[in-house]
Image (cartoon, rainbow, N blue to C red):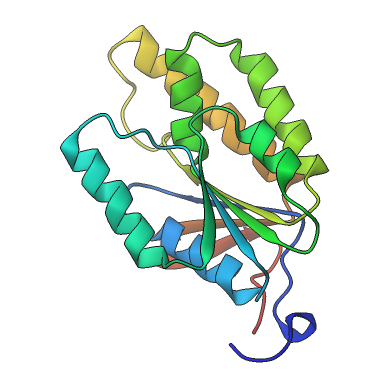
Length: 184
C-alpha cells in the first residue's frame, strides 16, 4: 500500500483474529498490521523448547521481515504493552501460547487474564491479538487439557467482548464476526 499513514486503513483499538492451527490467522493478522503503514511491534509468546520449534520461530521471523520490532515475551505481555508508544501498532501472537505459559507456571489465571485485558485496553496503540479456537474438538480426556480448553474459551470470549474487530479464519478465509475489515 502506498500513501501516508492518514490514508492507510485504520484498525480499532483492539482486534481479535481466531482460528485453528494453520488456518491463516497469523497471516491475516500480519497483513492487517502491515496495512496500517504504522511502525510495527510483534509480541511473540512462543518458547523454543526444541529444534523444531526454533526452526518455526526462525521461519516466522524471516517471513515477517526485518521491519518489525520483535519482543520475545512468553509471559510478561502486560509489561511490553505498557512500553508501546502512541502512533504504532502491535501484533500479539499468540494469546493461546501466553495462556499455556501462564497455566504451566501455575499462575492465578483469572488474575492474569484480568491484568492482560486491562493492559490491552490501556495500550497507547492498536493491538491485534491472534488466538486459537480450541472448542470445536472432542472433550479432552484429562483434567489439565479440559481446564486449558475452558480457560482458552473464556479468554477468547473476554477479548472478543472488548474488541472492535473479531475475525475467524478457516482455510485462509476470513469470516468477520464483529466489526469490519479495514479497506485499503
